Length: 363
Image (cartoon, rainbow, N blue to C red; front, side, top):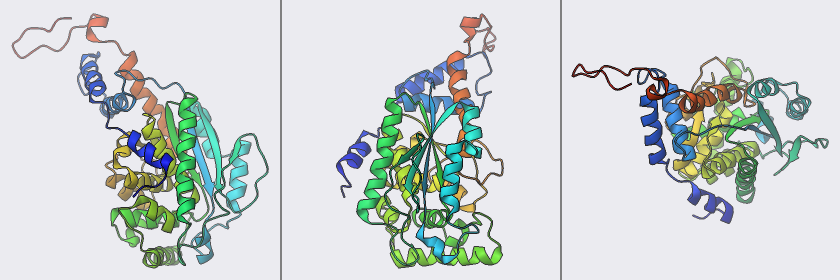
């Protein structure tokens, strides 16, 4: 079923990875001054990057973290250990440069784009803040749909346009970050619906719930799915019924980055839920996703596995904000540089591996 002109066009622009560029990258890896395969996943990642960019030796010049913020009506069910007013306060912290993502993005040499996708408060104007507010927080998914179909489409289009803009401005590597009190609850619902996993395994402690709070939260997630009956094969329907404004915008970023032939880094659980929405809409996009880290939220492992993604890092993180994604940018960039900057055996005048017939390969 058509979604909108922009979304439909974006889906059509998501092509398979460039096999010719990947073959050239693989051949170059075999000629670099090291035993074949000795750089492990860095080699695999560099070949994936070649396929994404359509270039045998891709380079990453500019990096951007797109951080979307939004609130959730489901907090009325008592699913978070923190009050909703933390969302706007943390957005202001991002704008002031005081959050973990600011430190990690600065360290990675990445720019941060902060989007107000649906904060349930009026935020003051700030040169680093973009107001793309789809609504003042979603409706309570335990009582009915999170948003209208029109709002869900607006989320996707906003994310696509943001990704396209950043790529046009020179960004070669995008990452998705989030902020929104209560957003692990819709993420648990999204993960459960799309992967088919039970709510008892997709629901985690979020901001630090105790055992009783966790059990209650899982029951709310289960009720949201029962009340709304989202179609697991229809990513837009899942977003509309049990999603979030910031989750939908990030789903659009994933689609836009994939259509623009650029890698996009999946951060933690909420970013993973957004990636699942995009994957359900256009599974081919998943070949351009890079999983940054393994969140301690149990549903994250399930979502990554469903998309065939293996995280680069496992550091016990569960903050969100794009923190793990920013940290992994160093690894992604290193993979590209090893492919492009290392010398081949011929260039370095180093003898290659002795062949089976006892003759030494040409140096």
